[in-house]
Image (tube, helix red, strand yellow):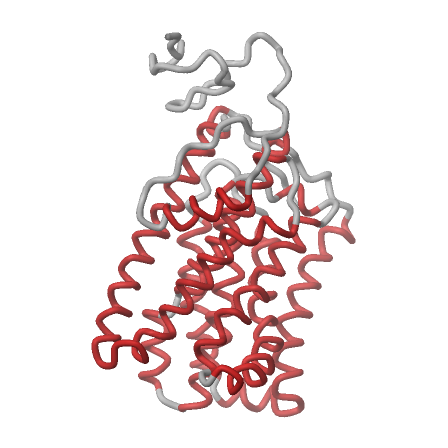
Length: 333
């Protein structure tokens, strides 16, 4: 069996990159492999299995992993910032109307603290991308989408909750698709979708959406209960929103890199996992009574481990793609 000339690891003769060090092995100038046939059903099985087991490295990726955004015009560059501001401000103006400024100003310390905690979690994830750090304008736009999606989720939860007897158990099936919609719109965008080209992109952008929703919801809970302890409890434990949407983003990115494009059905694998985790989180105390708090704590520990695992495996894929060897499609946007 041939070995990598750089690190000496064993490689397959059909490999284009060393799986250990990321060295480009395609010295023959042969074209990359054709797009892989992606099975949504198979990805569903893998998405649930990898909640507890390792995910296999990416193999046979398409050229989209190396696509770059075109150099933006000034107007195009600022468009994402305008979208972010519009979504963020639009949520609070539509949610509270003329009282929005008064409510935020009267609780400014709690408002700022809520979003500061979300950005600390997001910074941890964002800095994990060593080779192709995502343009922060994209991060802000998706974070703002997470905030704005709460405006749509609230009424839908209220409508469908009584039909099923419990609004909290309906929420996962309303909120997760709404949050995922922002990711899908980015991936399908003719220009901006070129930035979404690796599993780590899916994880980072998914966290951005989820943490936007997390911050919005935490402040809403504080206003409802007007209790600092509620805000502290939710800030420490309820960042799972980021993990859930990151899972959706991960499997959406895997489908794109393997097939070369995405279809609406590619949302299903990660989305099913996200809705399941969210459903369990909301339902433990109803299912188990006081023991439900133990289950919540256990799920919180698992989600921390799982999020670290997702990031670590996505970073491994970056190396396999040759990103650490100078092949990362880094853009200034």
